[in-house]
Length: 213
Image (cartoon, rainbow, N blue to C red; front, side, top):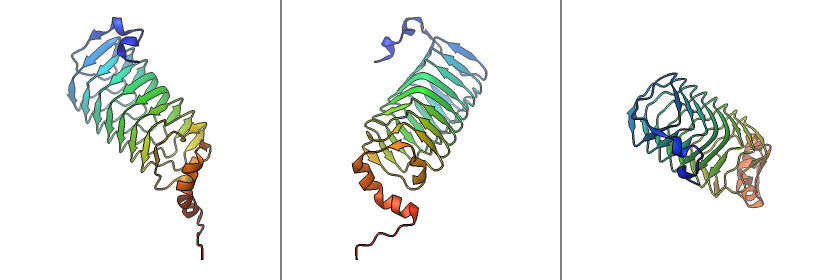
């Protein structure tokens, strides 16, 4: 599936920027823009396409993204706290040093994306798919994950401390490295192979000493 497959693709009108706070963007296409420190708190995006967009040190707190297509974006040190995402696809994009804490993510697909040092603390994720993604130093502490899956994704230095998981499927992850917060995996699905790999970490978290002789 790509942008041309979206039912609103033929309605999109180009928008040269900039982004503005509390602005409503409806069936708008942003192409190959580089925006430095845009201030767009409370903006809403409905049936929009963001393609080749670079945002450096932006602020989009409480912004809303509904039925949007996000492709080849690069968002660095950007504040997306308390944003709402629903029925969106994010493909081939980079999020680095991004704050998404307290956000609401529903029916969101991230495909072939790289998430580096992303803060998702206390966020709510429902029916979210991380497909063929790289997650490094991503913090899900105190987040609620329901029906979330990670097929083909690598999770490195990912934290789930005090998270609440329900129907969250980690079996498809190609790498699962958790430095701490193992108790937050309660309610998750993992494979037997992953269990064996995580066993020493589980033992350490429980204060169990493993000794063969």
